[in-house]
Image (cartoon, rainbow, N blue to C red; front, side, top):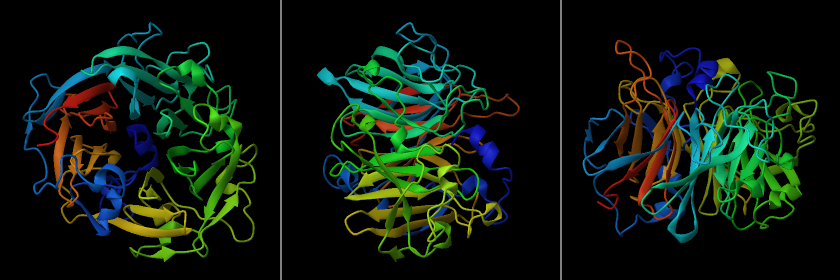
Length: 478
């Protein structure tokens, strides 16, 4: 979550009640656990599937972390002893393509396997109209010339040397998160639903765009309109069925929905999602608001999927449309979304009754099992008794080679990347040192976009402000 988004959605930062503890609610969009955050439920659920099932190199680790952070003499990034970083790209530097300058507000990112040992990094830029440096407009890659968001793509060799850096898509708005596809592209999501003629935009926004980092002109700047027009956050794809699950991070009630998109060409590869499909929203019988559920392990069978009346939201936002007498299921702050163990997991960052939710909570992780049409609340987060502990407002997550998670922090004060072991132990992996405040009142830019290279030898991460992309290497197997 960007500082701009947080200031718009969190006016009260006191911690006197669950509804007001906005700084530590958490785990929100991540589904991971920050230090100073309590939880109930099966934390093992967070690690379902893929790399987390078995740490690289064999058995599990009995200690968490890689030791204390060592102050960086260059004042950029503190890391544990034995780790080192390389700055790959900085806001305002020239793009190697000659298309303009590196844009502002580095956010969600993925690392995709390239040819001959290369790695493709696709990086979101969560730019609003007020952004200092927008994504440069490039013929064939620009959707709305008035918009400043989009993606840039870096190509790296096996030593993390930058071979190429160019625009992936431009003219989009508030590109926050998204998700990778099974065929090696990135789906970037607009967390914005402004229409043409509002706030300076010349086209409707609120769409998903596909970005091919190896050849951006192959995907162009084509909105995947059948996937819906709303405040998108993240996506996860079922590799078997090809169904795309989507979260909506709506800022006002009746809050967002959880969607699935049934593509006409589920395994068609690059560009196949343009063929369209059917967008549906989740209805949990008897549960109009997920925040009303607080009991971990609570299971709901017979989940229904209801066709969205107007996916383009021509007149009415989707969450306000008529879904019939039975209604539809809403939730506040639907953000993180990922696939694992034949299930899709999604996160509600928090809920506040004073803002319209049924009950207060500090973060939920839900698991949906498509084969059984079953939804289960697996983890509930809450505030620690010691709010001074680190781990403030965790954001993006990724699977770590050590068999746990890496979590980005974006709250007030010092900013960290935290590791979370499978045993629930939290440790500091990195600390930002770029002061964007003053010597008297220092501030540090949040982290975002943490991801690992396909061979798990490098952790890539972004500092949101000033926009900086790092490659971190070291003894990950230690």
